[in-house]
Image (cartoon, rainbow, N blue to C red; front, top):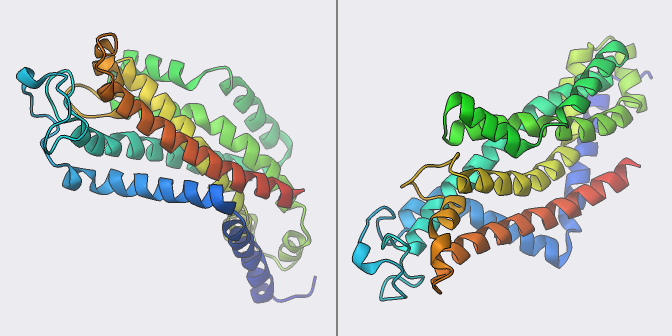
Length: 293
């Protein structure tokens, strides 16, 4: 209890950094493969438009559902557009839209979790009760309602899904924050006159980072599936902009005629990325839970 503030701060921060290093070193082959897939997908999302060999919106109806050709390894879609180019460019909306959902929900959910764990009492009761009520509204349903009120498009869908994901984040991080709140270093900092806000910002949140990172990886997959579903329903990304969910909706009629590649390629991209995020999140989150017990 008589340690100086600098020593306590160093101990608290090294605890978080050490936990993250431990997880990174024990992901295993499946975890590292998933990490590589996630990194590749994010790079494609950023640089996809520069990598696309053709204009993803160039229509040539004479080539509709055409097979592979020179420079078109995945063939053409229903409107004669290059499938590979649309996949590469569509990764941006599919990935960055999901990233926006995760970032917004993590920011709000983390703040609510820390506030609930720190204040306890009526604040904790109020926040947890609100989260229980929010659980009754599925994310896709909120996205449909948002499209009805604010119009179709990616911003409304991202906002609605972000709100829907907040209670999931807050519930998981609240449990972790309560455990962290009970550790001796928190009491030591309080005795030395450090304010609650400073303790939460400089210690509690940094030491929750293993849980936050793990939760982000798990949520990303769910966000991608939900955004793809919203676009598939015509309420998210709009034609002619490329998006993986929208590509499935546009080209599903060709499946019955044997032209499955455009829809299959987009669906396969979603499945591979979602599985990679889920495996990575499971490895991180499972280890975070183990360390928290």
